[in-house]
Length: 179
Image (cartoon, rainbow, N blue to C red):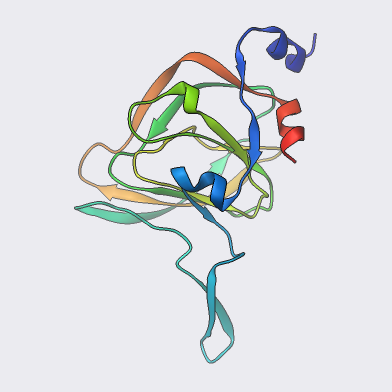
């Protein structure tokens, strides 16, 4: 029996995967992409500035951190067992490879597994999780992938993790339906 067949045969919940769009992702933060953003020439016309792509929220007493995350690829089906959130600031992921990746989120506040959503990026799109939004850690697909990450540094605890009461599955069938 294949892993996909085993996951579907198991009575666990399979999560629908949606295309990543600004409108669909708005309750969770920002999609970082060039399409539809404000742009203008700078440096005597030799450079185009794609302006204000995400709301970087570092909260009171915070400072912006810029890091590189190197994500190991995940395979489908994938079992989502936990989510995390950053209560003191936003967290942005900007892919450095043109490879699709998955995003699993739930609204800020008390974690409600019935409100989980899953998105697949086009590869060149980034995401900026709003303060307090629940999300799964990085879900690279296909190959090792690098992400520029902008998030909050400073005093105070800024990462909560919570196990789900029941696992949720991301399947290859759901991924194909989203593309």
